[in-house]
Amino acid sequence: MQYRITAPVHGHTGVVAGVTFADGVATCCDPPLGAIEYFRRHGYELVCLDAEPESVIGFTAEAPEVTVTTEDTTPKPAPRNRSTGKRGSDEG
Image (cartoon, rainbow, N blue to C red; front, side):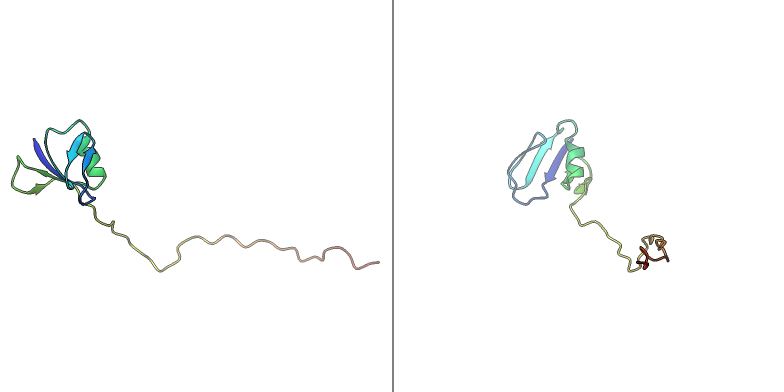
């Protein structure tokens, strides 16, 4: 299968996972074993050129969705027992 792979870093030129990139884009037939999984994990966009036009099969680098809560849900530690007696004696 033939793929067009776009790097998450715009303009990258070089070899990544056995695939040669020029200006952040590579086109290759049958990439090396494990290369597609590597590209998916690291935010590269993969487009299969043999399938339907422009069908994206990879992931794009987007910020993960984060849920923020305003409640403090962390458990509080139990209070410590304090001695009510006096330290030392006042006799003297």
